[in-house]
Image 1 (tube, one colour):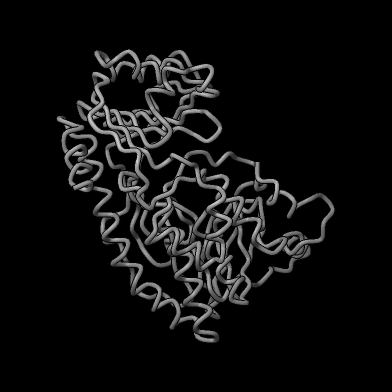
Image 2: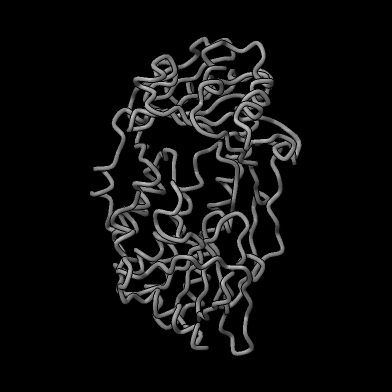
Length: 403
C-alpha cells in the first residue's frame, strides 16, 4: 500500500528504529527529547511539522510495518483545520494532487430510497483517501522516524521527571516530552487523565463493494461519487464513492453495548442476515448494500470521551487526536482535529526551544476549547442523523447551509 513508507524499513537497513531495537536487546533503553506514541495522521503531522522546523522526534507505532493494515475510507479535509495543518507541514500542494474529484458531492435518501437532497458543488472540503494521505505524511519524514512493531502497553513517569513507555515485546524507551497520539484506548492518557471513553449507543458495521462500477452498478448510481446518507427509524447508511471505483459503506445502528459480540462476524452469511434484520422494509437498493458486500462485515462500536474533556498540566506529557478527544464521526472532525492538534503542538514546541512546558501549556490552552466545540457538534450530529424521523433534520440543515 504505502510504497514510500515501506522503503523506510527495508531489510538490512541501518535506521534509528533498528537502533532502538538493538539497544533494548543490549539492556540500553533509548532516550528521546520528544517521543510520540502512535503513527496515525495526528502523530505523523506532529513529526512532520517538527521536522520542517528543525526538530526531530521518534514515533512508535503498534503496526508491524507501514503496509500492515489498510487505512481505508475517505476523509473530507477542512479548510480551517486539516488544510491548516497541511500548510504548516508544507504538504498542501502535494495534497491537492490526491484529491478525489467530485468527492464533495452529497446525497441524502430516506429509507424508501427517495432522494431528499443532492449537492454536487465544491464547498472547501476536498475528499482524499485516508491511506494516500498517510502515505504522503510518512514519505515526508526522515527515514527511520517511525519505529514499527512497538505496541505500547504502559507508560509511567520516572523519579527524575522523564517518562517511560513499555512495549508488548519487552522493549521500552524514555522521553523528556511524551505525546500520546495512540487513539481511543491510549496508554499515555492515564498519565494526565482518569477519563475513559464510553459507548455512544451506536455501532457502525463497515463494508465494501469492490469494483462497484462494473460489478455493482446500481449501488454506484445510488451512492454517487461523494458522501451518501440513507437515514430513517434511528438507523441508516453512511457511505462514499471511492476513487478506485469501489463503494465504502457504514451501516449505523443504535444497539446495546456488546451487541456485536452476539453476532458471529466471522460467518459472512450469519452477519449479513443479522444486519439486514435492522433494515426490514427498506428499499431493495439500500438492502443490497449489505447483501452484496464483498469480504467480511466489520463491527465498529463508536466510543466517545466526555464533551469538554480536559486535564491539569502534567509536566512533559500531552495528548492529541482521539487520545485527547475521541468523538463520534457525525461531524467529520476526528481526522481534521488530529492533524490540527499535531500541527499546533509541533509549532508550539518549535517556538519554545528549551521550554517545553511553555509549549505544552500554550498548546493545551487552545486544544481544550477547540475540541470541546467539535465534540459537542459530533454529539448533536449523531442524534440528528439517527433520529426517528431522519433524514428530516439533516435535509433542513443542508438546505440552510445552501441558503
